Length: 421
Image 1 (cartoon, rainbow, N blue to C red):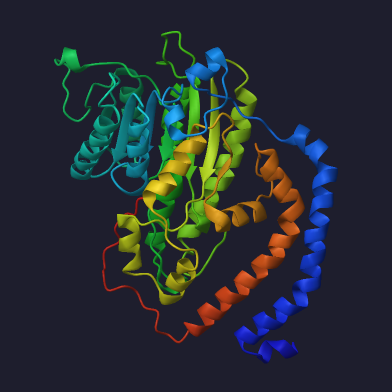
Image 2 (spheres, rainbow, N blue to C red):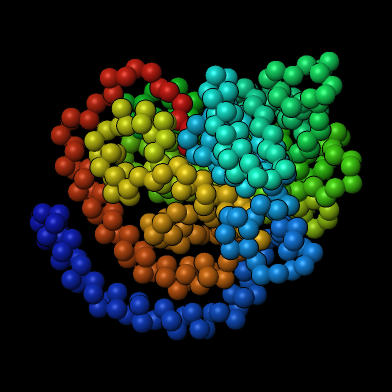
């Protein structure tokens, strides 16, 4: 209790010096834990369904190690991306176009933004495929993911009878009509944030974030999963094996709650519970012809239009804490998400950078794990990382206390624009 009266900087320094013996002991013990646990972890770590590039399935050369090696991947048939008009969703579409994905369907609310996004994706595809005969067909669908009934009907069109461009094609346009089948990759990137202190948030702002960030992802999976599993009455009957990977987009705010995100963080935490439960159900059901994997991405602050809008109303304490993790380029985030989605053994957690790795290791809990390396880190380093995290929390406390002088106010912009994660 004596140290509580000291300044934060002195308390941090004192705690750091006092922690050195314990940290040294934890570091020394970690290799012993690794050696003793490795045999059992090799058995316990769960392997997911493997969707390999066709050349690997036939000739079994060394595994692909770069994006260019993935262009013949069996999952690059049809990618559906919600929130695909901007931000991470658009960056994912561009990355997939560069990898020659045959069909890319962008879903968002604003049709004009979708048309601009379609042009950018087609330009990326043309640049990548200019010397080859393969083409990437880009489709756009303007719809609100919070409207399940409309989304469910549109999913049937997309998976069974979708035309070359669902926004312009007609039934009489026979030359443009083609059946492209269910998604082999389903990226859920639609979401937004209202970063305000709890006292400044209205009940309606809690509800809208729940509806978009959590229920929106649930609606998308509910609408498309039956087609991916082949259990829908209008399922694909062309003899091809169905299945694929579903990538849900949470956030680092879905791993740790922080100032200003009392409405946003719970919606991202909820996605983890949804992903864990659904992953277990799909693992039980995926022993037949149709296999679907679940991955959960935890992107950090990313330089998107939604992030720029968010910063206009972000409280000072929230901004300072967020800045401690840096800001990422959407292309970098998208490339990592696509790479992991196409991995022969796709992970459950998709994290970014050293902070992301630390948080994923520290908050692993009962998460399924598909990598022996990740399992080793979780078993041997969790105690050490918990120790380190207390220093982070103390520093965050310093920031919030310094900002608790009543200057945090609601942003002058009265509108709450949607943020694409």
